[in-house]
Length: 438
Image (tube, rainbow, N blue to C red):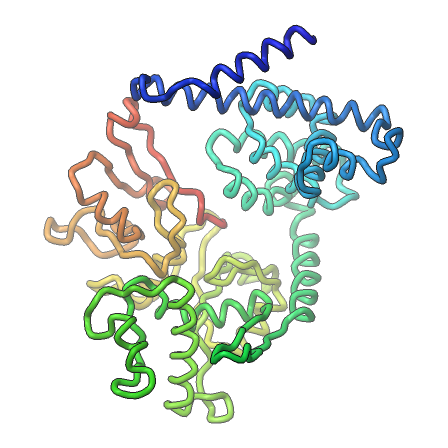
């Protein structure tokens, strides 16, 4: 073992000191892939050692108050990193198949962390065979999901492996989370003393969905605020936002701040405050047809936050709800009348289906996207859900360029992309799972 460690250190030092410029493009990509795989294997070796250290009670022998504190001092890492290592090591110790996959480099450290988080969030009284099934299911998803996508999928893992137990548990979990989030809500505006005011706060998911629905249309890059005081004290602000047609130089944070102020101005100027009988902001609630018919189960807001059945009923009384009803296979059953342009009910149905840019790997939300005609309108293409897909501005330009990417609607009604042969000789269709929640 000691000889192997010395050789490992020598090889790692040689690779770290190697010059990259002599490598061809193919050699450079191979180098990246192999070094990454080696890193994952070494991470598995570290986890095995950490588990052995904990099993021998070495931290206690060294007078450490806990294994994570010992790791923090020994490796000079943060306490959060130490806790993640311990959780990963403990899970590998109980699931040999997962240990083998991580040791072989097929599952990376970040994906493993997502699996640990998902399994750790399962109910403590769940049967061991169901817990193991959840772990193996998550393992199978690592071949096509990155850590963030895997963590999102992990939040629904019980629904996949034990749907009969999931409904009641999920409803109760959502109710508890909603109560806690509501109790923790606050908003403060604190003058700093130099002409600025610090805004801090926490909103529950329903309140955040309302605020997002109100300000998101004004936050899209290049969108100037609808209200600006020309010639008054805010004239410079209007000029900086490009309201006269110039380039919008605001940061995303500045766009959100301007949008919040402009929404408030619209309410004040238009007499739309609740005391004056104004409408609530428009929300979209998504629920399955069977659940809606039985008046059971929850839904999701158009920002992706899950809400309980009680919350859906309350929001239906307290807000202007635009329901989008889906069948069991996520096909939209009723989204209103279609129009020539992708607007109104059709646009809302498209947003509900795609939820964001559909190009593989893109995380742009629906509000920042254009509706792309797969078969161009000028070539006889129709304007309906079988011929449109959401694409952000960057990827909208990309699919119109002659670069080989092709788009189509799959058998399940969701967009998929065929890469050009120079990226994938087999041109296997790809999808973007980032926004999918059903």
